[in-house]
Image 1 (spheres, helix red, strand yellow):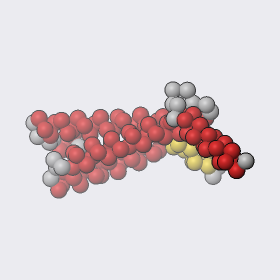
Image 2: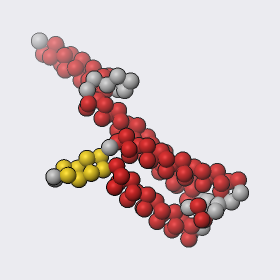
Image 3: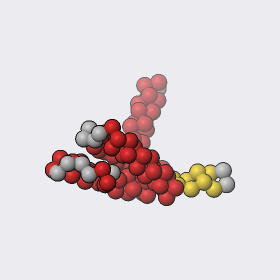
Image 4: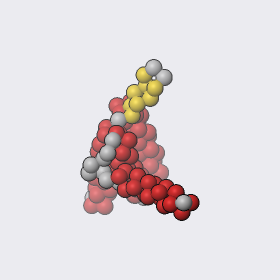
Length: 124
């Protein structure tokens, strides 16, 4: 009987993760949130990778300008994609992900520019 209980627990715990990983057809809002968060996490990783790569091409002053631009972008993203209301805090992962991907594209454009013709500080 004890083995059966452990087997049942194992089957339930593994089947839950299988459903949560089926992002083409999430079972419920929580699975959908899990899937959206996975996409956001990957977009955020790509953004951080692009930011670090771009820094490698820049002078000290250009790095400072990039950092300030990035901080402003984060503030804009946060105000556009989140809301505080009545003690609650809401974040739109769709907005956050799309905004992050857009910013990554901007940084990757700067990287290509730096590699091809040299960095243009006015575009940081």
